[in-house]
Image 1 (cartoon, rainbow, N blue to C red):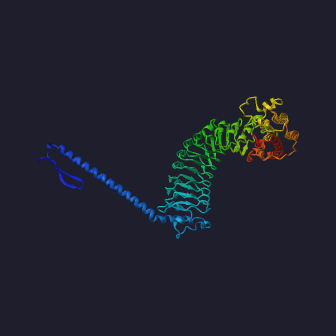
Image 2 (image 1 turned 135 degrees about the vertical axis):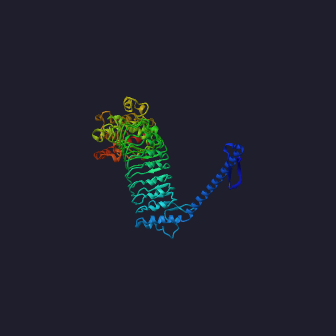
Image 3 (image 1 turned 180 degrees about the horizontal axis):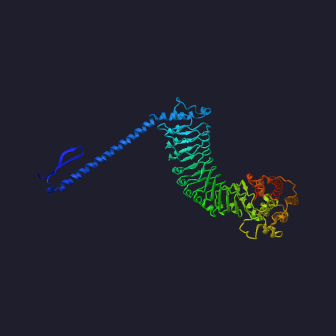
Length: 586
């Protein structure tokens, strides 16, 4: 029999049927052209069939998905939301259920108190129950509100734990349960809510540690877990939260070093770590967070020095609080480059060196707290920075107590001689129009030495020009009067405390000058324009009230009475000299 091959003319669907009889194989000679045609036709048909089926499958899946979504949105799901909220209400404490009286079967779901619905599908998208003071526990049924985007349960009294079912809310973006009594730990299921932007569980009773899964919430902008009982170390995965702008772990029991991974959080604006047990040297990773506006590290165990270029690396700080740690070294002078700085607290450390005069550049500074360090060198010049601070017109609190400034370090008590020194410098500045930090002074050539060498012959050369051109009566002995006043200032600012004028002597001298040259009665009334003149002694006017020792209070009260009389007399004399000007030179 001859060998032959054939292509069946019959066609089933899009598939060709092939057949053939093979005999005498050795004599068979294949028809190559025929085989190629068959192969090409088969492949073309198969591909076309496959592509068509894929298109049909995609269309089927798309329509099925939409049908399911419509069924969920407009079918039984509306009732699901209602039942979930009624179960939630059932677990609210009885005395507070009246606040949710609108939550009933006769009222439209979207009209219930604190409930927000979507416009199109009328599914529950928000629960705003902040400040309702609701008690009880949070029902697990909340996990059935699958369209929830925002939950606000702040300022309530919810106890129990955070339901694991919250992890079902994959649309959730805002979760705030701050100021409640929630215990247990942060449920692991919560980290399934990958769309979360704001997670706030501030001021609860949450314990345990921070799981590494926290780093999976990569879209977080705000994370507030302060005032809880969290313990352990910060997970390295925090570095994955690169969208964070605010991070607060204040008042917990967290410990260890700050992980280097936080250097990646370059959008961070507020980093609050107060009152934990963090340790190690000041975290170098923080220097990478140039967008920081508020840095709070008070009450930990950080050690080491601050970098000298601190102010250049963190130029946007408004608040920097690192008191009650174990820092050493000097205060970086570059802090004065942070022009936005308003609040600087470095008390209760072991800082050394002088207090930089450059703080005068911080025109928005309101609080400067440097108490309980080892600043200063027991020299009279330690307090000259006070004069420069008069440029900080918004300064409300200045604490430099219990350092080594002048005589203040001796026995931890406030020294009358130290008050006299700073007051004397104020007199010299007020009537000369010059400051101890002016560029003309340096080394042994100081404001005090300059004025001392000018008295009495060249006193007018040293006087503020307004003294000489202020409309004093003809024949007024300006040089003599100025000499007497400046001699009081020099007497107060002697290098040796033992040689300085006592405050009683200062009062007598100033009264004598006023009565001799101005014929004014004692106790002249202060003009309103001078009431803003700051009291000079730092121990009286600038100490932070929270860091004063009780043993100093009685001394302060006595000195305050004396100094107030001194200031009245000085202002009265100054006002006579500068009567055409309605403001004090600071």
